[in-house]
Length: 121
Image (tube, rainbow, N blue to C red):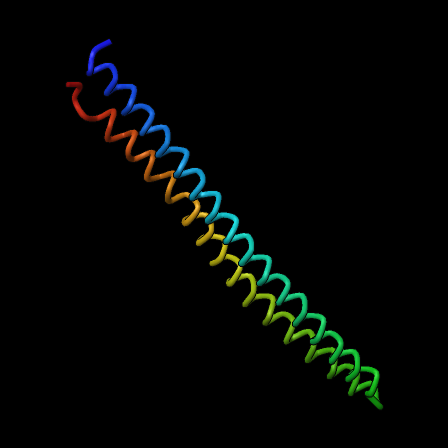
């Protein structure tokens, strides 16, 4: 075999290793992103339970129907506002996770495109 053949095998092995490294990097980024999403969800669940418990206490402590309706109305308003804010937050986290995870793979795809586009020597 010639030196050019060995160089071709070395280039192929190096390229393959870079692809594997990109997949490992993407997997690591994805795992960290899912962990962050999980923490946000756990925090949201905890806050939601606290808010619900406070609303239940206020409702049970109410002396009139008007107070019950007011307590439930306040709870519904706060819950809806938190829901909308959290949708936005989870949307941002999801987009960030997708972008960050795809970045190493996109870089490898660009490397393949550059390799294919360059003239053979």
